[in-house]
Image 1 (tube, rainbow, N blue to C red):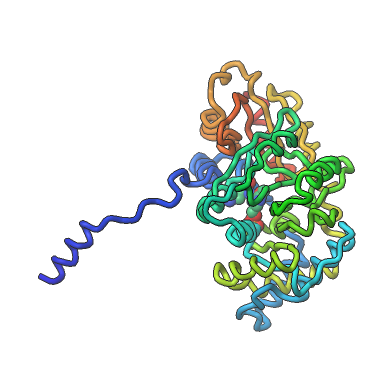
Image 2: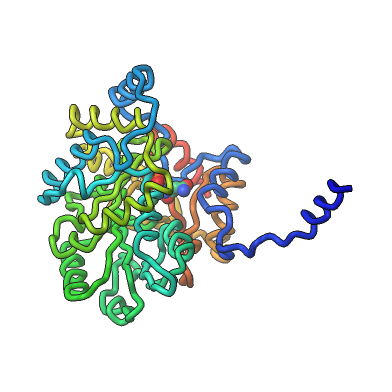
Length: 397
Ligand code: PMP
Ligand code: GLN
């Protein structure tokens, strides 16, 4: 009897309203699943189909087998934080304090969430640029904030700084930047940083700079980290990820660099979100990067060659390729493919996966209000054999 009553109570119970009504399964999961179901070549979700460096894998094995399988320090392994601080000094000419300004996180995703949770409160507005990486808005909304979407200007997907100026209100707490930019491959210029500096100087605006592709800039361009500018660094959370730089996206190790008052608040969130990040991998990363600091410096050429190979293989296709200045993504315009002109990018991406055997990501899902463009994103972080096979199929359409 008691059991029946409790079952009844359970059945009549009302579950809470969703906190994230707009959220569904991500496009990355959806397209990777569709690719697997149809045995398509997966150029959708961004990850390499090759391994990270052997010396790094060996160090992970070493630490796994040497008793480093308990909690790491909350802020991250000191040796790894020092490697990061040294790199920032070398590349961006900024000296950050290893103890108070660098925190290791479980991927950039955790760092982005923790930074937003640390400073965004109910009613705050956060400016994001569309097409925007998918994790920003849910994190803003879970913390009671509202994303204010501003479109990047085609064809170069640049920021319209006068539109940013106009969008700032007394409620604006944060601006989120992402360079090199996923999904477009656009990069911020030094002039953009000038404009940003002018915009924020004298305000209390916080910046969150997603720089996970910091080491993947092409054609000799320098990555414009916000850490290069003292006026920006003083108000910024700068986030990066070892997944992108070391071909190890499945390890989910990233970091956040921020001045002490921001790092202090960041760590309050981090310590109750995950407390700490996977220990043996942090130790291995520190050893590898100490022994091989040039690895990241070789990435631009490595990925530029992949981009150029992909573009060359596509020259006989009917797609138009948009210039990619960074990341390992390439946008393709399919409006010249007569028989597919009327398909939305979501429809076309599904068709491409199920019928042509190559999976891609539609761009419209990263917009609040998508313009009428026929663009899909492909990932060229693949072996040359994979690229050849995929492009062979794409050129036949
Ligand atoms: N930001 C951007 C722009 C990304 O492309 C990604 C990766 N996929 C992330 C953040 C998340 O990185 P991580 O896998 O380290 O959580
Ligand atoms: N950042 C990766 C991409 O853009 C995907 C990460 C994920 O699947 N959440 O493809």
